[in-house]
Image (cartoon, rainbow, N blue to C red; front, top):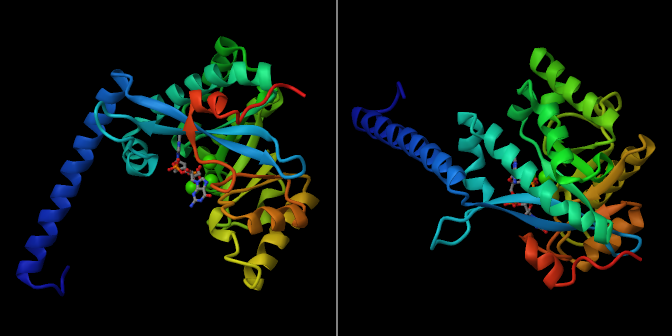
Length: 280
Ligand code: C2E
Ligand code: CA
Ligand code: CA
Ligand code: CA
C-alpha cells in the first residue's frame, strides 16, 4: 500500500471496509438462518469400487433461503469458521445427519461421513456432543466417520493436542477418522503414520485428466500404495469419468466419490432414485 498512489489507498480502504461489513452481515444472516431452520444436509454416495455399490454417504451442508436457490458451503463456511458459528452449525449438521442416516444404516447397511472443521476440535465438549448425537439417533459409533483436514494434527501446540485427545477418545468408541483433501496440504504420508486415522481421502485435484497424464497417474498410484501399506482405507474424490473409476480400481483404491456416480442430493432422493438398495 506504501507504493500505491493516494487514490488507490482510498479505493483499497473502501473495499476492505465493504468486505468486512459483508462478512459481519453474512454471519448475522447465518445466525438467523440457523434459528429459522434454513439449512439442509445433502448426501453424496461413496461407492465401493469392487462391487459398485453405495457403501457410505458424505453429509454436505446447504443453505436454503426461502424462495432462493440453494447456497453452497464454499460461500458461507469460511465466515462461519471465522466467527465461531461453525461450532453450532457443525453440531446441527452432525445431529441431523446422524438422525437421517440411522434408518439408512439399519435398512441399507450404509455408513455416514461428516465434515468437522478445525474450530470444532478445539471445543471442550466435542467428544460429548458426538456421543450425544449417536445416542439420540441410534446410529452405531462404527457407522460414523469424521472427516478432518491434516493441518490441525500436524501443527504442534495445545490446540492440536486437544484435537488429538478428542479423536483418540472417539476412535476408542469405534468411530473412524478420515483425512480429507489429501494432496492439497504440505504434509507427507510419513506424517500420517503416527496419527489416529483410518481413511485417506485423495483430493480431486490429484485426478489425472486422461490416460496420457502419466505424471498424475503415477502420483495417484504412489498415494494409494503408501496409504495401503499404512493400513488405511482409500477413497478417491472427484471421480468424474469412467476412466477415473477404472484407473482407481486398477490401482487398488477401495472407494470412490464423484459426479461419475452421483452428485450430492437431498435425503429423500437417495431413496426415490434408488441409490440405496435393500440389504443383500
Ligand atoms: P469436501 O469435504 O472436499 O466435499 C467434496 C466437495 O466436492 C463437495 O462440494 C462436492 O459437491 C464436490 N464434489 C463431489 N464430487 C465431485 C466431482 O466429481 N467433481 C468436482 N469438481 N467436485 C465434486 P460442496 O458440497 O460444495 O462442499 C464444499 C466444501 O465445503 C466441502 O469440501 C467441505 O470442505 C465443506 N463442507 C461441506 N459441508 C460441511 C459441513 O457440514 N461442515 C464443514 N465444516 N464443512 C463442510
Ligand atoms: Ca469432506
Ligand atoms: Ca474432500
Ligand atoms: Ca474440499
